[in-house]
Image (cartoon, rainbow, N blue to C red):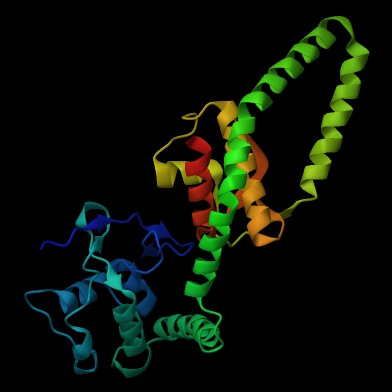
Length: 282
């Protein structure tokens, strides 16, 4: 039976290294060029080392020679993705064992060891990612009824918005002073909403709802009506706050040529966005 190959889009880190992770987080890897940079060696050296025809693995790396690349995933245009296990072993080799051992590889190894230790502690203490994902899915299922209720209210909310716009239009034409009051009310509401947000760290990779729609659903900016987009954004925000029990993060994005703060989410929040989107659009 032929294994179906899934194409993954690379996520480029600030240092230009391309990493890959599949949708459910069970597979991760790095490009050959990215691994070469982590190891402080040339891409050509690793390409030759990994070549299926002239594979010349050093003795210390012989145990990994059968599973160098992800078998069920590839990058764009068929790019090979080095597995997490192999990447770790190669980095360790160039940090400690190779004649070409260097400071770049040692720095990379230190970083991976630090992150790996944290993951190991979570596992031995019972705080595993699998348990977290299970709990998240259970909570999401419990929220589906609330999401359906939200969808049922969208139509009536749209009618209220139209009525409100009519009132503002009349006020624009005949009661200028009243619109000053409207503006003060809107400003107060915005300030109240701002209290439910925190600013995302500058070095954290985040996605706005618009960016998530483009990457995960293929819906480009403007692909949804403005009313639906606003409704979806609010539904996601409310679901996030209910699940996470913490303020929503905001990040700076360019909107209509101006810098603005918008709600942003991390990779681990994608299940929340996905379930909310599915139920909202149903």
